[in-house]
Image (cartoon, rainbow, N blue to C red; front, side, top):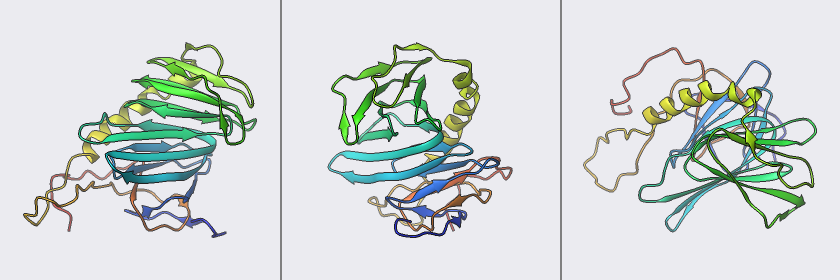
Length: 231
């Protein structure tokens, strides 16, 4: 959590708040389920911060800051409330439009954005705190490349290095469809908040948290009946 120095291992059903930081090592990856149904997967050797996670008026806003590594996202299409989801990197901001996409940042702060489903709008960061006025739209099976201080490069067909994550994106989609199913409430209160049931996860590393965002990790072997009420 912001202001803390020590890192803490994640625990099952741990909750996160804004400004919490997530770090994975070379043998780990972690999935995080937000209350608005957005499911992300932080791949190995990555560092990320939950910059904004809040609801106001008819909009759920989620902004993630990827400092290094790879981030895979599954964003549900809006039904009654609009999901505003963006990923900031040192060189660009990628805004989702109900989609599946990946954002990567390498050691040289070069950003790549590839889309598996839907569309993503990308603007480059000209200098700290200032976005370019020009936005490019990335569609299915396309990607772009953004260097520090430069406009996004011309769209190209998704490169093999990005395509290898398509299967993982499909797995994340199946996982998201399961986790987005409402858990029956023990009460008859029609105003009860919608709940999401996360899986049991392996231990990963992250800041100490207590929050609005639920964590799930990969490689889960235990099967659960997601229609059973939480105890």
